[in-house]
Length: 118
Image 1 (cartoon, one colour):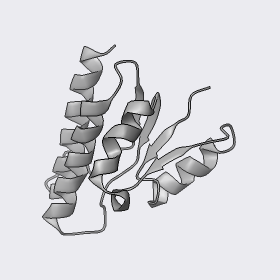
Image 2: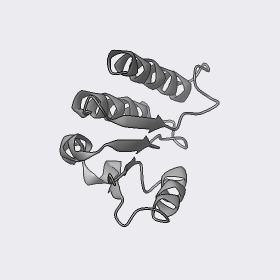
Image 3: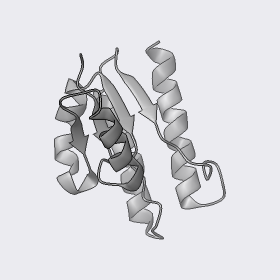
C-alpha cells in the first residue's frame, strides 16, 4: 500500500484529510509551507498519491498567494508520471481576486500535467 502525502497538512482541510487517511494507513506523509520549499521536491518524488490542500485563504498578502502557486508548480515539477493528485480547490476559483486567480491557475496547470500523464 502506498503512503499518501498531504500538502497543507497543518491547515483546516489538511488536518481533516490526514485524520481520515490515518484510519486506513499506518503512515501519512505531511508537508506544510512552514517546512520550507526546499523539502517539498523530495517528499513529492516519493509519493504515489498526493492530497494538495494548501492555500492561504485568510490573507491579503500577495506573497502568500505567490507561494501557493509556487507550491503547486514545485509539486508538478516533481511528480512521478504515475502519481495521482487530489487537488482541493475552492468555490472562489476563477473569481476576481488574487486567491481566486491562484486557485484557477493551479487547476489549469494540474489539468495540463494530467493530460500529459493519463
